[in-house]
Length: 317
Image (cartoon, rainbow, N blue to C red; front, side, top):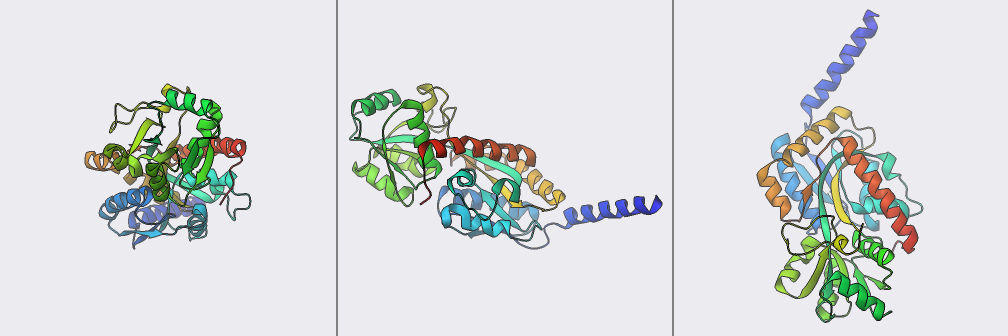
């Protein structure tokens, strides 16, 4: 019995030593998108905090492609030692259903670490469209079947599926027009080549404020503080809610004490007034909690969007 007790004690000391020494060298944070987008900007803001507080550089490595799956597979296959992170985002939940033969199971192969923020999308239309509200849009759409082109930043993105959810809940007929990113979609929306877009708020905010496009509503369940006069879609379409959500994941098998250390530091960041101000500029609301809490967010979002993918017939590009 004494030997067993000693072995357990030494194992505990070993775990405490891992947590105390971590991190001992730079951390790689994989962002499965190109530089400069909302996801990349969020990671760089948070990486600055972690680098300062953890005492080692947290280096952003952009690995775009494959609809997010290249970056995810890279992290899944990494050594589970806490030195390779993933910027978890809506595509990870959506892709579980959108792609039929992924070389990983996100829900079981990725360890949830911490939530970061939720950001709304915004339902916006070209100025040429004679509508001023969500109710006006629904009425116009139903009176003019086949005349609404709905842009997106790509098939299967949260932007696309926010629109598909709207279609399914309102009966509006809209033709989906996928683009390779939000930039080209916004260009054609401004020009009137497409009529509506459910874009991430940060990439559209400047165009909305300049009057180049008209915002009808945000897709979150509550109004966006940076645009308090803009209603939610749910104020007209009861039960509608669609947000982009972000967090940190590590490979399955990463020591729990390392996960807990990063989780605790993340929650400290999300309680810091200066950090909250920076994140609010992205339209972000903090997702604080335990690793299990963030795991529940991933599971809930995966289940929610699975229904929309199946109903809409969305296909991977």
